[in-house]
Amino acid sequence: METQSLTHYKALVAKLPDLKKEIGKIIVGQQEAIDEILISLLAGGHCLLEGVPGLAKTLMVKTMSEALDMSFKRVQFTPDLMPGDIVGTEILEEDHETGKKFFKFNRGPIFANVVLADEINRTPPKTQAALLEAMQEYKVTYAGNDYPLPKPFLIIATQNPIEQAGTYPLPEAQLDRFLLYIKLSYPSEQEELNVLKSTTGTGRPELNAILSDQDIIELQKLTRQVHISDELISYINKLVRSTRPDSTSSEYVKQWCDWGAGPRAGQALVLCAKGRAVLNGRFSVIPDDIQALAFPILRHRMALNFRAEAEGITTDKVIAELLKAK
Image (cartoon, rainbow, N blue to C red; front, side, top):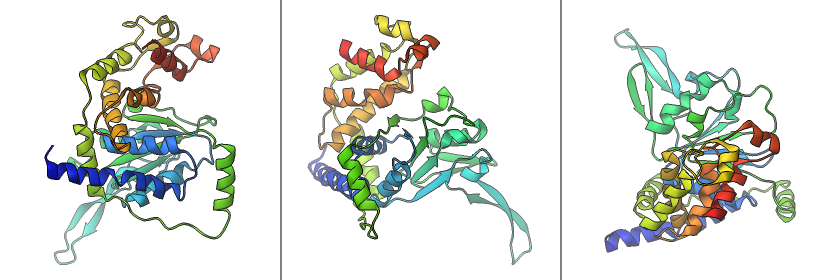
């Protein structure tokens, strides 16, 4: 890495703590979730947020996009939502000079830097699938034409874990497209007290844009250049392979799992470990980066058997056992 380039990257990395402070003006607590969303952005992936109502999932995403000076769109997923409501549709227009009529593509809310897919599991699979091409190819195809999405591009989907009546669980293929599966927990007593004090008055802190969309693109390039040793890549490979019942020595996995994570999980773990290193001002991955991200990367890429569900065994418990063994 050239000296001039390194100085430029260091200046950008130095702004990341300021970015977190800016988000903290509005969002009290939830630091782990904020870090994981930012890691997903640095790694160029998408994330799924799960939490009970009232944990500020929507506000968290909106605040982050404001502090990043990026365009933001929210789509409320409902049972009657159609794919065209997300990607857009063609409308018939008339050229006033010639009188000829033509179709013009009217872009949907997916054409934004940050797209919040709120309560994604409340819409049928046909509409959920409208996100697949955008998530993987970063473009939308309509009537045979390709429309590139703005860069950087981040989809953050939310779902409610407790109210499952009338919902459509995401299929495994689409779950695998999410780089991270982030679970939000209740705030601590002190954090909740601070929320009550700061959100029930008349004032609202003004947010400053810390990083631009071009800055994020540069940081995404830096993330891929972060060093990771062959030993840590080998560790990641063994960890991912140990989640598969047919190729693991773990009796715990064989007892509770039907199938494990695929190669995309290993790619995600390498990239996100690099992203976590950048977020913490480092240019090299350490073992803590891998262990901290194993849960949000692997938990949605493993399938437990019926016996595990009956016994209350979760994928997080399986991952914890694997990390102990490694």
